[in-house]
Length: 159
Image 1 (cartoon, rainbow, N blue to C red):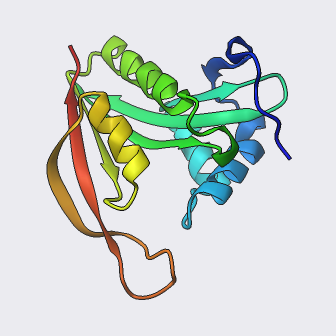
Image 2: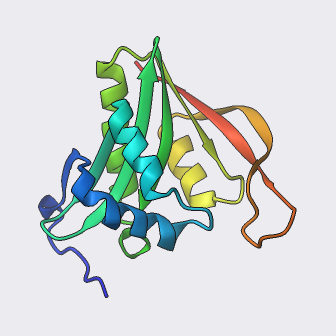
């Protein structure tokens, strides 16, 4: 369905628009067992959160949402479409979100990640995040069972 992107310079980072939301929600649906809804993204846009996409002319490769207030920031979601993983798009978007957090006066950034999401954890640790806590039974089960997965709380100082 998707072709690889031969020229990474075709992929630009820009603010998310309401017209992007069908593509963003599709990326969530093919990436996560419990994806965010279009309504959640609309709420984030309306609230003035930092909502960004990596996009070509005709597709959304990745998206992320960051909130920032009172010297802190929080990556609420970061998603790369499965067809475009392992090409540093997640790193590129995370670097952009952290730069936006710095511009907004944040001294640190927090996020939650599933312990089972080894690729995401590796990215975050490589970007200077460290584990500062845990949220018990935070994520709904992928299988629909009563089991809920914990979340690791990670933090990064923004220099």
